[in-house]
Every structure is written in C-alpha cells, then in structure tokens.
Image (cartoon, rainbow over all chains, first blue to last red):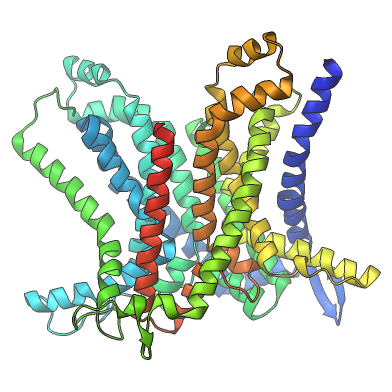
Length: 285
Length: 282
C-alpha cells in the first residue's frame, strides 16, 4: 500500500511538473536569457545589459511603460468604484430569482470575445457612430464628433472589458456578509457611511483585492483595446513588445520589454497582497 | 444599507437607477454589434439602410455572407480545433492536479500550489513570447544539431495549443478541485469495503460525481481558448484562428460581415453557457 501510494503520487506529479517546467519555467528563463543578449555580429551574441539600457535611455519606451502602469491603475480604480455599488446591490439588496438573474446578466457580455466587445465600442464611439449621431440629432453637437482614438476611449474599453472580473469576486464576498452584522452596525449608532467603512469594506476586502489584482493584470497585458480604441499617440507597452517581436524581429529588445512587464505586474500584485495581508492562494484559489 | 433598514425614497430610487444604468452600459456594445449585422449597407454605422439577411446568407459581391465566406469559415474551424485540443488536454491535467492536491500530503505541496496558480498572474502576451522564444531555441537546436526540421515547434497551431493550455490548465484545476473538495470520501471507502479495487471505486463513484465539474471546466476552457487573443497573437502561424482573422479584417476597416460573425459568436457562446448551467443544476 505504501509503495502504491508513492507510485500514485509520482504518477500525478508528473503531468503537473511537466506542464509547469516545460511551459512556464523554462520558457521564462529562456526569455530572460534572450533579454540579456546583445547582437555583436552575424549570429554572434554577447551577454550584456544593453537591451535594458536601451529601455532606460529611450524616453519613448520609458514613457510608454509608465503610462501603461498608471493608466492600468486608474482603470482598476474606476472599475472598482463602478462595480462596488452594483455588486452590493446584487449581493444584498435583491434576493432569490432576481438576484441570480441579475448576476447572470452581468456574466453574459463576457461569454463573448473581447474583440466583439471592442468592436461594439468602436461602432458606438466613432465619428459616424451612434453616440455622435445621437448628439447631433439632439442638437448638442453641430457636426460629427470623433470620440475614438484617444485615452478616454481606451479607458472606457478597459473598464468595460474588466468589469466581470471585479463583479464576481465582490458579489461572492459580499454575499457572505450576514444582514444582522449590518443591522448591528446601525443599532450601535452607525450611519450609512460608517457602516460602509467599518463593516462592509473590511468584510469585502478579499474580494476587492482579488478583483483588483485580476483587473490590473488584464489591463496591463491588454493589447486589443489600446490598439483598436487608442490613437497614434496612445501607445501601450504590449504594442511595443509586439512590434519588437513580430514587426522588427528584434527579439532581444522585445524579450527585455516582456520581462519588464512581467516584473512590473509581479511587483504590483505582490505589493497589493502584502499591503492588505492577503495571500495568492486565498485570493485566487 | 440593506432592505431591512429604512432609507429615504430618493436614495433607494437613485440606487436602482444607477444599477439600471450599469446594465445599459453592459448591454449597449453588444446590442449595437448585433443590430448592425442586419444593416443593408457596406458599413456597420448609421444611417440605417434597411433590414437584410445578406450578411449571413448573401452569396454575391459586395455582400458575401458569413456562410459563403471561405476564410471566415476556415478560421472558425481552426478555432474549434484548437479549442477542442486545449480543453481536452487541460481537463486531463486539471483532473490529475485536482487529485494530487486533494488526496496527497507531501513536502512542498503548498509551494507547488502557489506555482500552479502563477500562470493566472502572468500577462498573456508574456506567456506567448516566452513560449515562442523557448520553442524556437529548441527548434533551432534540433536543426543545427541533427538537421531535423520540427514543424510543430515553429509558430503555428500546435504552439497556439501549447500557449493556451499553459494557463487554461490552472482554471481547469481550480474548477475540478473545488468540486473534489466537497466530495464525501466515505462513499469511496464504502466501495472499497464492498470489495471494489481502488481504480474501480474512483471510476464508479468519484468520477461520476466529478462529471458536472469536468463538463463545466471543459466548456470554460473551450470558450477561453476560442476567445483568447493575446497569447494566440504571438504564437500564430499562417492558419489564423477566428479572433486573429477578425482582428486583421477589423484593422483594414469593417463591414457588417464582422457584425454577423460576432452575432453568431454571441449566440454560440450563450448556448454553451446555458448548456453548462443546465448540467450543473442536475
């Protein structure tokens, strides 16, 4: 029996270890090694930090990196602010059938590809689009209004795309908050604001953290939304990675960019977990 | 605020209005995409030129419908093929992982669990390029060392399958693991007491119990693979799956054909989602 158990363990460990090592660890090590290469001649490479130095010395790269990070944070905050009241409404204000129907309605848009959602926003926002036409017919605008191809359009797209990943964890944690606790808060003399601050938000913290982590990650790594909704000026860091890899075939620099993106997202995720005292197992698993 | 605490009428009404507005925001892009699939015009935008089915069934230029557009149909086929491979693979590995974390206690288990979750917090595009770099190193090595040209390691469908599998497996593991956690192990012990072998007990008791979660994981994996964009973009070769094919067309300018494809996608994925919910209820 002991030998059997050992054999079973080894059998079940094999796929896991193969998957993690061949598809996650070795590729990332390779990526790191390539990012340290500098091309000195045809087929000849030196180990150096040249690619990272290029990143630091070229203002466009640095600027795009910071812009992507800041805009992702802003998008995460906006998503949280919009999603929280809605999640609270679904979790606490309605019950039974209405509750599950509303929850399901929240999920529906996300069964559809991100491409379709972005396409929808393009139809709405562009010069010949619905909103522009609506504004003209109401008389608020005298000619066609172009609302696409700017940072605000990117923001709308990012918030829309990320909404589900905020609503689901929020609803799940808020549902587990007992009504009595909220009532007790009011009985003890709290008003709406203090109950929210002292009871509801602390209880929802695990949901807030996991929602924010996922949304931030998705915004940072998004390629489609910034490319389709953003203009020439609004570069996203993933676009730089794509152009280095696929368009310019400069894998060394592209790998360095990829690694920087990975570090940025890991640092922010780790920091967020640390700051709120949560762990990855609890928030993701 | 909760329903049992009285609130001012104004507050309750404006709260409900806010939630309504939120759902309008959610629905608007989808409704617009679906609506313009029936516009009798070359562009998915106003003015409305009248209703037509041509973007689905039309067979003559300039209005070639989805069902007559070869490249789109082929892309759908490619996507289905990739999605089936990815879901089948990730279900198998996910099932194995779920048993590993549920049934065994070993040193380093908690670390391994965290490592298992990592693919979820790696940006998709980074997963894509790292696999691209790694496989092309292996492919180049095989070519230089042995003169073997391994087509499967060059950008193409097999790399797309590998890339998507690398993070969808985590999700399959979580979905199946959550159900296995709720399993009452005394049922399995009863089967063992009644003389069943270990494998027979798992096959007749545990796996049927896990079936809804496995179907659920399959559907989720299928949809995630079908819709995946970032990882696929970096690994794709000449056979483009649907999302990539649509993206290329969208860059060149859009016709209501794309709306028609999108509408079909919406219908297809909602059917799958409903099917899954029905299975979970049973």
